[in-house]
Length: 192
Length: 91
Image (cartoon, rainbow over the protein chains, first blue to last red):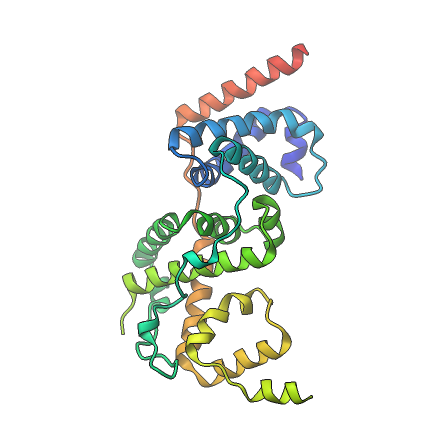
């Protein structure tokens, strides 16, 4: 709450801290709603202006970051003229390629090992870059949920509120997204 | 009762287990489903590894840090802030 109080007290530096922390994830999120990066940048800029105008009326019923993301998504939706999204669940495949299971449904090609190596600093550096690009490569809806949940650390409740989706849909998108990212890491770093 | 017995007998296979991982981690499985999932894990090192990898994936995602603003962008935001202050002050 300290940052919020400073913002309300017209502390310029508090605004800079907030922008430095959230500009990048907001821009990434906005890109999923609008046709180009230029439009996304406008949306984010516009969102920051909205944040400044609205901060005195912000009641703190949700967290500050949830409020920020919510404003962003509303504006990005308007800008992208993207209709309220009914989540198509059929557009994504299973969590694991079906050819990796035998006829009985047991692993024929079990997961290759990679998590033991994450302590290796050099490798961890590579992992960090790869996981970031893997998330960026996800279909927009999965990327939004994974970014808000796993990168930004919002609760499922907060994500549903920001994206206006049901808890069930949130979970399906999260599952698809995480499964894909895991597969990318296994493919890249796994050893049988 | 009969249903419970039938459910208890029905074991899941790996192909199904990997689809339940998120529901499991989100505590969204009903009690019987959770028990079935855990019973499968107890006998399946591959699915145990799979679950550990999903947890590692989530953990790694949480370590992604946002790109910082360029000095130029930072200046632009300070200008935006001052513009807003000037506007709101003159209201």
